Length: 375
Image (cartoon, rainbow, N blue to C red; front, side):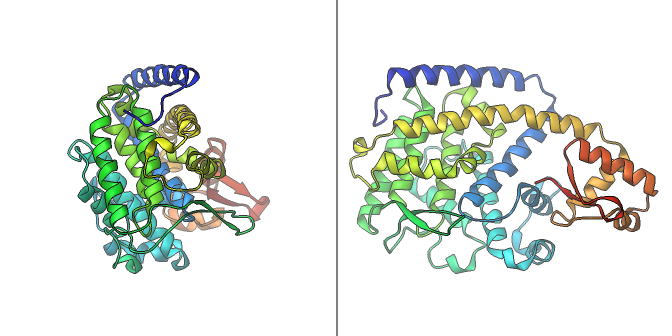
């Protein structure tokens, strides 16, 4: 059982979101395999980008997609260290930490999405292994990745306008208390995810209690959100599990980040409780239900983007790929003429089409106009 009885109003909303999930699931089944693959890829990229930006990384989704493409060869994931220097040269070395976070988050989400069946029942060893992968490219984390914290930490929100930090939650102390809390949480999850009638609520409580424990020195937010996705995939609800690879819930958490931290504080009262029944979960449930509903609506946006992509001419695709190879760069027509050897008239027509269909944005006028990928 979960640690909070849903109100009648919440039960009605759960029924409503379940109906929405079933409807979207059935709609997806009518898509072509190419459409499905494209939407999954876009959701995967968006999840990586949003989850890392929530923790103050700076890469846009376009840049994350470029990194993912660079690290993927023949449909297989290649090791980040082999491509790190090339990626840093393209995206600038002053963003090395963000790039390392993206590469680690990508590893974890790839494991979660491809091995979720094998990862049940969930174990502390699995969670520590995922944490190790999350921080595997961050050299400063070598001494603590994959290990529970040894010093006190806190859940902190940062106002990006003022730089002011606020303590959202004071987690469990390190040592035996962290180990005991994690043992209890994992045991509860394995008992509950296949038994309780609302797996969405199980996923919410699991995510929150993990964050309230904050078992690791760093990376708890990113890992907690990955575990949330894992719990949705591991549910017995075929519709919920089936639509999860097509949605990017983290994108909507990012868009309402201040509300997200506020909800975490409301639920906890700012402190970890050994008894999970002392938390006031309902605001968290409402927040995540709304995030799931909004993410379901994104599927048609991805589908329309795929449609626009398939309608592009060969020259437009060539030009778009030129922009994707330099995701940060603002490019002028004369630069494209040198790089891709197409007539200026063809280039200009393709740029106008790519701008109209939402792939590029234009700045400036006349000969000084520049184009850039829309993030």
